[in-house]
Image 1: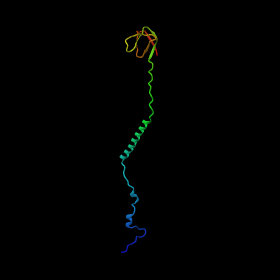
Image 2 (image 1 turned 45 degrees about the horizontal axis):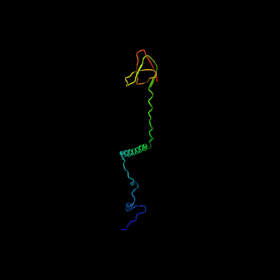
Image 3 (image 1 turned 90 degrees about the vertical axis):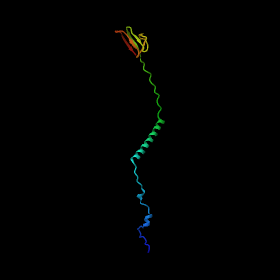
Image 4 (image 1 turned 180 degrees about the vertical axis):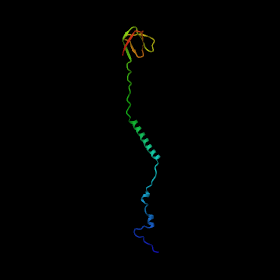
Length: 122
């Protein structure tokens, strides 16, 4: 028997076995779950948060020294006194007769009989 020559344009079985696979077989498809997407995004956010926190701690402006204002003067003087008026500071047992030179504060008590008036100015 005589071997037949393949006709031009036809491909034999041996030639088909040695040929390259079709191009679309080289692409491999795979499925990505939502869980893996959430884990990757969460990891990136956590890393960016840690880097931002570290950067903030290193470059934060210094805290301004807070100075508390001095308490307002809460003392006053009598401007006019009519009658016998006595003043006692809190925490003491001594009543002092009031005159215009006596300094009084919010914690002082005053005593006088009815009909007597006291004018105080700060």
